[in-house]
Image 1: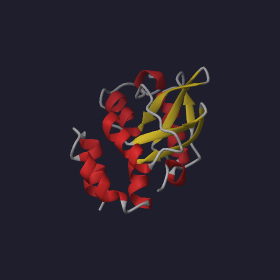
Image 2: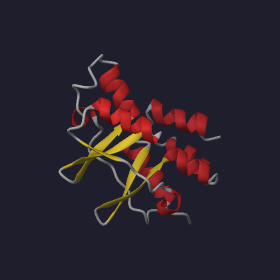
Image 3: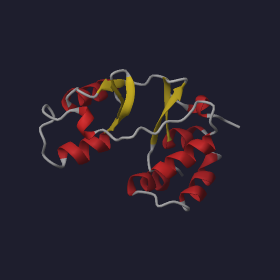
Length: 151
């Protein structure tokens, strides 16, 4: 049985809550990534995703230089243990209505796993994801991943 640690990416980029959204987006663009794990005084405070920026900054025509990461990040942060099974990770994503899970081991950020990562690296999970998602009120953003990216 595959575990989260077998599929997760290990190069996770972080940002502090007091950084402007513009600076955070510049970091995401430079790294070609879709999210940043947010820190506040050395503790994990949330996650900033492209969706957060679109819905909480761009759609409201806010100035990204005057809006700070801590104001628009998704919180509380839902995390998973690297020893968790892929099935447990998918269930947690669906229960918490998220697509990305930071991976924490003994209070240290060791990786990040997404539903797309799971489906693309382990095709046997596709049926499980589809069946389990039918039991939850899945938001459109997650349903899109299931319908279009999980073939």
